[in-house]
Image (spheres, rainbow, N blue to C red):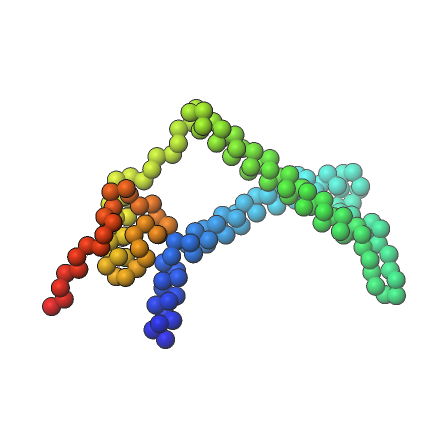
Amino acid sequence: MKNVANGFKEFIMRGNAIDLAVGVIIGAAFGAVVNAIVDNLLTPLIAAIFSEPNLDSVMTFEINDAVFSIGTVLTALINLFFIALALYFCVVLPLNHLQKLRKKGVIEEPEGPSEDVLILTQIRDLLLAQNGGPALGTSSAPSTPDAPTTKPPVPPVA
């Protein structure tokens, strides 16, 4: 049981697991924004054009108690298009514009971590190395160029 607990602890401490968790949370937040734009701005366009909130009832027919709805497929395709449209114009386009401004030097790049964060990162890397953790520089946190590349001596246990 201890091996399982240690394995889980190592898995959680890996940088990629934490990065993945952060990515999922940020993705959910972006999803909420994009869905709000689609549901409250773009989907009402369908209601304005077709006098219905969606096309689910369009081209629906039944054969031997089996219901076929081409309109539901069309609604899903239109929603996909609207989501892609909202994502492009509200996220991708502004970020690409910001990146172009940074390349031109109009907007400065964000500063790197402060000196105290760099020192704490070095301490963390040294502690991980002493405790048999991942090798230096393999964690998700930024490491410094002057971080030691060899293991520090371990003090004798009395």
